[in-house]
Image 1 (cartoon, rainbow, N blue to C red):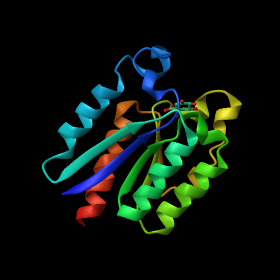
Image 2: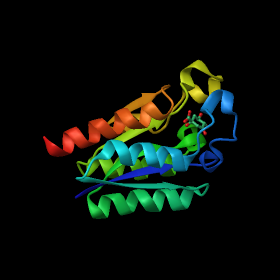
Image 3: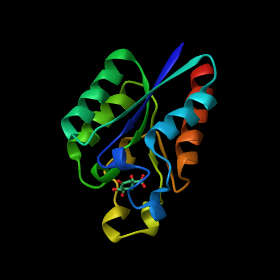
Length: 147
Ligand code: DQA
């Protein structure tokens, strides 16, 4: 059984009611259900959300220690958290996949969202496809883990 950590940063706990025109009207439980259905028998989805930078960094340390691949939506931390970047770098330096995902396309939004301090240390980035950003990332992580 392969576990995939699906980590979500600040304000994503409000998914469903937060700016539905940008992020859609489905919540994180709905995302978990979709990913679990996609995952199939051999993959366990461990989906978490926090508004706390330190907690998110701790979860990346946990991924390194347990050898777990990560799908990460860093939310607003994307744009300024060097602490999160350094923790994400540890994941990919350990040879694990870390896919940065975004529901919206930050490049089509305000200028401050055009910078990601995470992308440079991520394995890759998928943005702009709503829940499908996560689904594409999961497909990739599962495929790479079974290759
Ligand atoms: C986001 C984009 C970020 O700019 C924003 O701060 C979020 C969500 C997205 O999924 O589109 O909270 O990461």
